[in-house]
Each structure stands twice: as C-alpha cells, then as structure tokens.
Image 1 (spheres, each protein chain N blue to C red):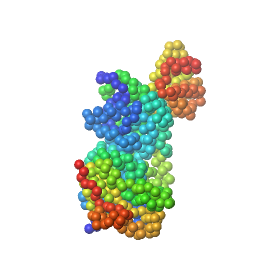
Image 2: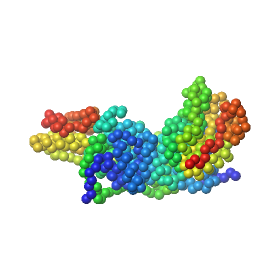
Image 3: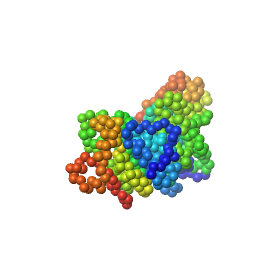
Image 4: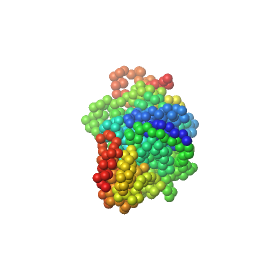
Length: 255
Length: 368
C-alpha cells in the first residue's frame, strides 16, 4: 500500500536534482518506505552522504539530521558520530565513486571493525555528476568519457570485498527489484554490525547514453534484464549467466 | 597543589581531558605518537572514546563527525599527517565545527627527519586548505603550556566554532619538566539554542551549535549554505556573506583571542620576536645580554594565527631592529614584514636541531 512519505521530506527545498530515468529517486523513496514500515523514529537517525549524485539522496531532501561530507569520507565521518553517540542510527548513502573509489579504504576498514552502521552504495557504474567518467565499478568494455575505446579493467565485486573485510550483512539489489530491495533495506537497518547494500541504480543520462542505450527506458530495461535474483540464477547455465548481475543476500549474521 | 614530572606530549593529554575532551581519533606518527598511546589508556579509565583510524584523513573526518554528535574531539599528528588532514581542516572551518588538532612539527619537507625538530608548518596551519577561511593556531613553549594551551584550545574552538591548531614541535613534545595541575580552570562549552539557525549568527558572528540526535533536523554541508545549512551553490550573495562571516568572526575578535608576553621591551632598541621552543633560547640570550647592559627585549607570540598585527605595529613604532629566530626559512619573519617598516632580521635554522642559546646571543650581539 502506498503511504504518504511527505512527512519525511523537506518540502521547502528545491526540486530533486536527479535526471530523467535516474535510479536514485526510486532508492530515495525505498529508504523512506523501509524506515516508515519499521516505525523507526527518524529524529534518532543520522544520514551521512558524500559528494556526487547519490550524496543528494538524503541531503537536503530527508527531514532529519544529515551530514553532507567531503568526497569519499562519509564512512569516516559516520564512524566518529556513531562511536561517540551509539544511540544514533547511522545510515550512510553515497555513490560508487565516493564509497568504492576515493573512499575504498574507509569502506573496508569500517567493515573490518564491523561498526554498527548501514552503508548503501548507489552504484550507477560511472562518475555521473562530472559527466560520465570510468569508475572502479564500470563493467569491463563499457564506454565512458575516459574509456572511449571501452574500459580495459575489471570492476570491483563490492560484495566480496566488504564480505571478506568482515561485514555482518552484505546484499546487492537493483532499484528495478523494489520489493526485494525494500526488504533488504529493512533487514540492514535492523542488523547489529556493519551492513552493506550495493544498489544497482541506472544512469541513463551519462552511462546509458555512452553505451548505446538511447533513452532512459532503454537503460532501465537493459538493467532489468541484466539483474537476476540468485535463486533464479541457479536454473541458468554459466553461458547464460555470463553478462548477468546476480542479486540477493550474500552473507548473513556473521559472528 | 598537584604537580608532576612529565613530557609535553603527556601534558597535552592531561590538558585535553581537563578541558572535557572525550573523543580522540588518530594515526601513529613520530613525534606525536605518545599522545594517542596515553589518551587510549586515560580514556579507558575515564570513559572517553578512542579510535585508531586507517589514516589521518579518516582521523580528522571522524573527529568532525564526533563533534557534531556532541563531543569535544581532537586528533594529533605531525607534518605528513597534517598535510593529509588539510581538506578536513577546511571542512571544519566551513561547517564551523569545533575541533582541536595538535601538530607536533618535525623537520620537513616530506618525510624529512621524522624524529628531529622543525617549525615549517606555520604557513600550512593558516593556508593549508583551499579558499578563504580562518583558524586559530597557538604555540606553547613548555610542558606547562602544553597543558594550559590545550585547555585554551578547546575553549577557543567551542567559543568561536572553529578548528584550533596547537602548533607545537618535537622539542616541546619530548622535553620532560615539572608541570602544575591547575586546581581551577575555566571551561567554555558550545552555546546551544533550540530551533535557532545553526549557521546564522548575531553580532558576534558565532551561531549556536546543536548536536545530532537532538531533533533539530540539521543540515550540515561543506558546500556553500544559508543560515539553516541549505546548499546554495549558485547564489553570489550567500557565498559572499558566508565567507565574510567565517573571516570576520575571528578577525574582529583578534583582541580577545591573541595572547603574547613581553620581556624587557620598555627601553629596548632591538626586540626579538620568538615563539615555541625557540623562545626559550631567545629569552636566555636576551637575559644574558641584559646582564651586559644591552638594551634588548623579547616578545613571545603565544598565538600564531590570527596574527598579532597590531602588536607588531606597536613594537615597530618603538624599535629600529626586530630579530626573528625560527626553525624554518623565515615564515613568521615574512609575516612581520607585512606590518613593520623596521629592519627585520630573520635567523633561520633548519638542520633538525633546536637553536642554541649561545648562537642567538652571538647573533644578537652583532646587531647591538
């Protein structure tokens, strides 16, 4: 049932800056839906974000305590706030460039310490805000403004990275799997310890356009086909799985 | 009176705890490491939060996060770590976050001589991060002052909502001396006001500061923002007003912030302007020359930034020569030249050793 989430938004701030077809708006709503359904008091939450498109998901739109930090350092800021005031429920929301590239060291160390925060990495597979440059999560062969002949390097598997570093909970979903993603968000918010969700969030304006996905709809359909649940993946052959992104929970309640 | 015989780095910890510091994040670096070692033990005793972070960038960022969660928070480092922290210093200045950074200066540049003394971070402390911003930097010359100035550093940070840098050096950090534990100290805590604009200030330019979790629904950002923290990244008036206030809230209070000490300057023809450990050698030289009847005096800068421009103008009007010994290539001497028409004699020693009192005595004798 659709609920009125306006209570969680600063309605006086300028309209959201996201491009047509951007997945971040879906994520923005799903996070609030998860908080609403869990009946968490948003005044006891702290939203921390970095620099880039996804940094605009919580700040300035969420009507709660928000900390919009330096590029790459959201998790380090969040660590200080959480360690001094453990009562704060701390949610870090930022992009793949922010969390995995410039901030990758903070990501693995926070996971290693298993600090009781939730990190949501909105992965649009490129640097969207600066115009679409290659990122550590860009698929091999994909075109960007700085890989005009195709990305020569393999991307990070962020879930494996964070999992082996010591996180309690890691999961990956696409914004085009909204119900599963919402369930994962609710789980991550309730788990004690470091929880990490990589959210595949299509970027039609930059990544799509540079990769022959001419309209936002093309980009969304491309990622809808590309992302499959790990339960469904079992029925497919390795050949069929070659270009797929497997989604689901990949570790749970590590001790 | 309680007194103890401890090192400068240990005194920093005791001063910080006395001032109410309960969050420390840092990364090991010579010659500042003893600070984090001691504070990790002391916090376990008194209930503070200690974090050894993965680098100095994470250290200063977590300190800023803790400050917004309500902590009096600090970090300590030396040159290389201080360089890594600079983006965070600018963020703290822009978001008006009270934090204290201890920089135990060592001989640079780059890795330099990690366990030897230096004084080359004076300008970095003021201009290390991009854009126009103000910080407060203070310079202790003894173990006692490491303790006293740490209390001042937290008070200044809380009073003006600004990063404060304790700009010390390896010599003061590692010297062991008797230190008096103050029975009475004055503590200033950040001002709170429900529903007030956290970035909008009255006449004194310093807004009240709430903490996360108090229901104030704070917007904190390093981007240009209005009185309520809302990003205004294309509004010329908001940008101009914010940068002016960040500047003026410190510069208009120079008289309250700046501290110094004068020695024998009433009738002096030559004045030594000195700070930090070097001021100990300077005072020794001045007193020896006074015994010989020479008219020489000394001013010791306890505050480095904001710079004591009016004090320099005042000294400049009374003397002919100003002698500035430093463990760098004349960073403060250059600053003094901005406010003085006198003959400025810069004495630089950058060999990783303290400047010997006899060296300064001989240098001064030649000027008299």
